[in-house]
Amino acid sequence: MDKHPSYGVLSQYISKYPQAAGALFQTYNDLKLAQQWTDLEVIEIPGCSRCALRGRRPNAEDLLSVVPCSLSESLSTDWIRTTFQDLGGPPHVYLAINTEDSSIVYYKISPGIVKPPL
Image (tube, rainbow, N blue to C red; front, side, top):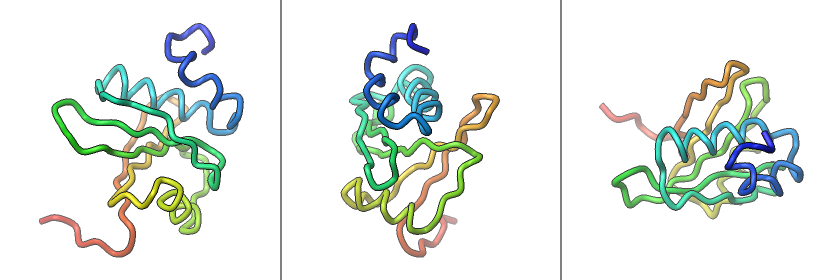
């Protein structure tokens, strides 16, 4: 991992939050290299002992927040509430669920009860 070009950007967060390091590394590289997000930055979420990523999809102006986590983690409503608070109350947050085979599934989480689009 330390030989990868993105390690320089992530190294201080990987050492600070080692339990979330794999998910952060995998999600950052997916967003930056595969999905080609721009203005990608790392945001600390101290209440959840991890980091989030904030950036823009290609050809989009909205600033989106993504929280990497592992499929094996247990998440609670308090954890999600803390995430929204630490990120400054965005309208929604994407959870990047990482699996052992390096695949990532993104779930859009909104505060409260939100009617799904038709």
